Length: 340
Ligand code: NAD
Image (cartoon, helix red, strand yellow):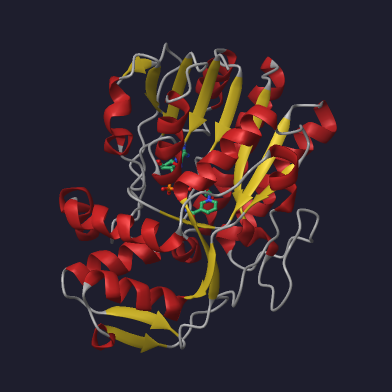
């Protein structure tokens, strides 16, 4: 692979993906395009910043001129950039729609114009909505219930429309809930871990009966790389294979790992549209592209808690600023990318 543009590469999953790409010897150049909103941090890239193949551009995926210039310099695009936190989408739905839908369209437009070899659009199983039983295959109807998931579903359809209309080589991945180091402490696992490590209370909605599939971020990134290299244009790939559990079971594991007890847990009424269960089948990527998740849940969760225990300097400032919801965006210019 010659040159890969990674949007959202300073975020949680994107930064793990960039590090993974740079471990591949056939990757000649990686450019991160990231607006560095409240969710993006160059520190997430760590030592990858020292790799001469990596460039970083602070810029917005809605900036069509910048996007056009950057896409023209790359052979593939992997698109992670998004507003990603469900709770925030209740108060700032327009930002979610603008970034997630129009941002995807801006990128897909440039990818089509410049004839990239692959455009991987990274999405979520939340687009299928709640399933009381059974599991969604890739052709299952989309029933998103919250603005975040609706914006992701719309962006999936926009991305795929560039395949149907123009033959742009678009693939979509839909993964379950990720966890691992560097995740913003607004998401449930780091939220609970960082609170429990400080001896604070955590809150469980309803009786903690909501079921999610927990996939280690490295396994998701391995799947995204497979789709980048081998995915068939026009196809969508579910990326699961983590561990299914209720939020109460997840809490029990986190209490054990953080040395806390159920006294630290307060039950609160459920929020609206808190989907009771997500579930999807990932046979397609397993059988067609050879995807096989590697990380054992208990070991990987323990490693994750250990990372938060050892790196308070990385998350403590973010917990103090958790009320700061407005993105801090500096528009990049259509210039040569700068080395980080
Ligand atoms: P994140 O919030 O940690 O990172 C998002 C990144 O996008 C940040 O670095 C942010 O600065 C950047 N960004 C936001 N708006 C931008 C804009 N307008 N222009 C340029 N950059 C912008 O998110 P994440 O958890 O790493 O998720 C990455 C992708 O994976 C998202 O598309 C998300 O929908 C999807 N996904 C996430 C999960 C999960 O469990 N976290 C599961 C399935 C799918």
